[in-house]
Image 1 (cartoon, one colour):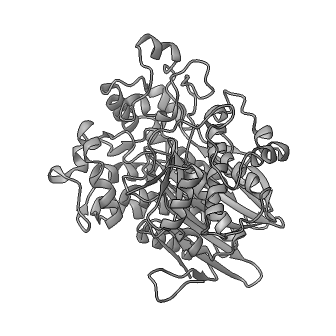
Image 2: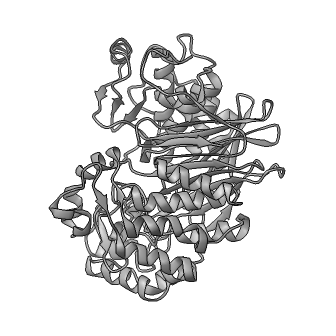
Image 3: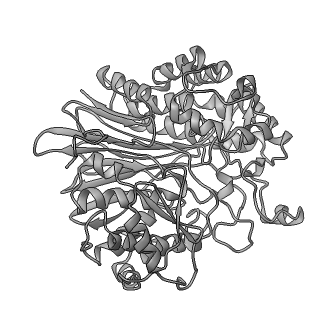
Length: 532
């Protein structure tokens, strides 16, 4: 239970509807949509569009999206994969002939055709009550009139000045520098692009002058993209069957690969076989077990997770109880594994920026939604006439012939962004998510075990200090006690105290017994959970 003498915040309670996002203006936008007759999906799209304007280092219409949506009364969870594909010319033969052995995170080769707008429109046509013409209006207003830069956004922005200078994104360095907290930032070109999409739909992004401008920009930076690649992107978003496991009396849902949500299910499955840690949610054994399970899951990701439309990913094997139990038996409570069996520790590029939000409406529809440029400001390549900052999801590809995640024509890369959903007794009980690039499976499973295994409240479960095994070290937030860090070091871990915190989470619990909604939001960002 929260100590009211210490800094912190309480869970948010409401009855008619709730939204939790990483920016107060986006949360308020979502609630406005709900109160004006929109459902949870409508509210999520409107809020996401606002975040694409006022949290531009994390997300944008030049990025991708994933969604889990649970329509009330159906007992179903619907998945959407809105991730983009590589250009048709992006073959391993081409990269080998040009002696490119790895994709740089700021190159045009790191840019896949953005899937966000295709995803938004596909979702709204199938399950929304409103259209982009209405839902984009708040974002258009923020882009045209400007909005004061939030403190965490400014802090991130300052760290990314070099990337923006490298690729000539000068509009995002007004006066030559990142905006300070409270500075008004205006995006007139993006406002006009959003206005065109509101009037004519997503097609104007993928065909015509906007697409031509983006393609020309990418070609100028050495990209292989064509206008045909973008035209095909209009129909790119796919409805997919979520993957799921039963865990701790609940059903946990994730989007299947090319996303890394399968790792969440693997980590939970391994930990369930070990039972509760004897030292509770903040203890050394609890942290150690979770880290070891994550190391094994990320190893599997690096070996197997890829675009299932082009590669055979052994999903059933990876989620089988026998396999997860066998992995769990590798975890010893007194020592860290020196060498992981088989594939070895996952090789992961730098990570971080994304937005995640969730909404529940008065009818009980629940939406778990994530939209991202991948790294901060994506590739750093700005299409100036359209105002679109372009993602760098292609950085997740390997330039390694025969690897499951090897770059190939019109292939989707390994994706880090993952929305989550929890159900019980045939009904959705919680849309949730944790941002943070590669950290996300660790973050999802850490939050879920905090909340549904160790009994912390929803806000405490988001607040609890985080740690993450990364590139041979154990990245530790400052809130982890020195005693726990010392004990982890004795077990064989290599702790590394990090400057930048891990990720950012939002969640809404649907308390059906008491007839209320309970929300939490991320203190590591500028976010807010709010209901009515």
